[in-house]
Length: 136
Length: 185
Image 1 (cartoon, rainbow over the protein chains, first blue to last red):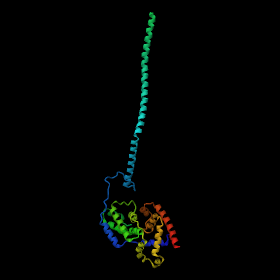
Image 2 (image 1 turned 120 degrees about the vertical axis):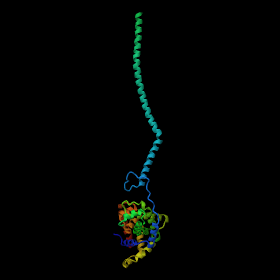
Image 3 (image 1 turned 45 degrees about the vertical axis):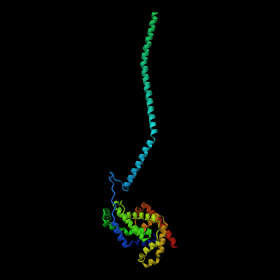
Image 4 (image 1 turned 90 degrees about the horizontal axis):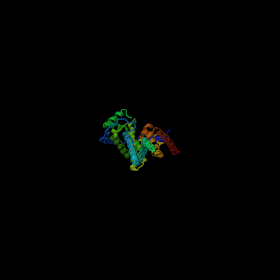
């Protein structure tokens, strides 16, 4: 329940109105002015935006995403030296491991081949020595 | 709200000046009153009202109702225009100007009511009590009791939730009753 004085005063305030001359003159002046043409976008979005989401909001979101992407790219570019180094380290370690493995295989092959040759040579030498002893 | 308001809006959006003329005739007094209560001076209120309807006419092609009445949009334009006015003019509400506008109507009320009310004094008391509310509370009270808008419409005009409007109205009513009761004592 509102105060009686407040109700009476607000009822009187409701009676406020502009002069008749003003209303006629103002309307004529307004209607003699041109309306602003509706600004249409040069393209239509393929999806329907939810109620309350204006085209401006959509562009604002797109701008934020672009800024985040640009920031990400900049971050990777500035730290690319360190990243490249870490990538190189890994590659080098892999190369080292592979090289060592290849060396070990090569050594095994070498020893395998040379062992037969050495055994034959030793056998030959020992055979010659036996012959010399028989002659003596 | 006008019966064929949607059709009138659509026609006016396509440049139909007669359709806009009908919308103008229907809403001019409400918008004028909304502004006059805030600025006091009849001349300033008329100038600002003219600017509101001129802007509405010019911007109408891009208007979208979004489920709210056309009047909410007009009140929003008027509200922003009054805010701009106070930002640039740095003036205050002149109660004498308001009394001058209300005197003619005051003479129409019954003699009993006239005897109970000292127009200038009581208007000053009510306006002073409204001044003591927060800007949001005052705006809600003016829109509710002078403009007769529903809480939902007020929410749309001032850009707040309907629940917030109801809370603002409740607090403002309580505070106004206290302030006006103090004056009566």
